[in-house]
Length: 129
Image 1 (cartoon, rainbow, N blue to C red):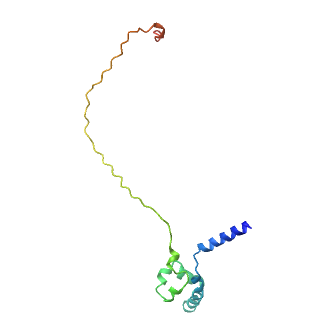
Image 2 (image 1 turned 120 degrees about the vertical axis):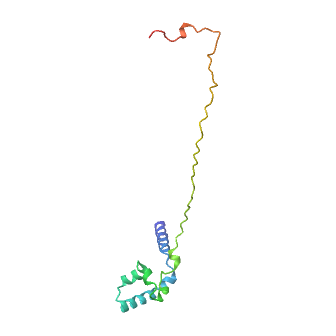
Image 3 (image 1 turned 90 degrees about the vertical axis):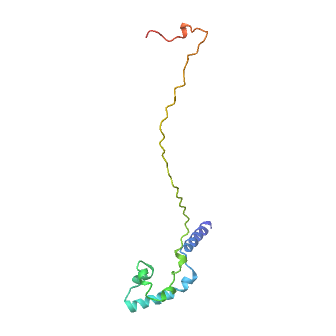
């Protein structure tokens, strides 16, 4: 039972992703009538008709007829994409200032510590290698 429910939900989501409205289904008869008009007037096949109205030639052909606004799938909401992009323009300006070198006077002097205890010969490093 759960597999059938999962498949049903998957098909529902798939159909909804096509973004087909009931209004588009009701306009399908207008699509067929306009395709017949193109076949009679221009001798276009159905695939040529689809290419002129929904394909690459859509921009050049849209101005010819007034019936184009009644065709299905011509709504602008089908062309919407909801992608949020963030463009962050960070100007990285690095100012390199060259300063003249200033010599620092030598003010450090090391003195060996003086102790009262004398190191015995046992703890001395070897003198002959």
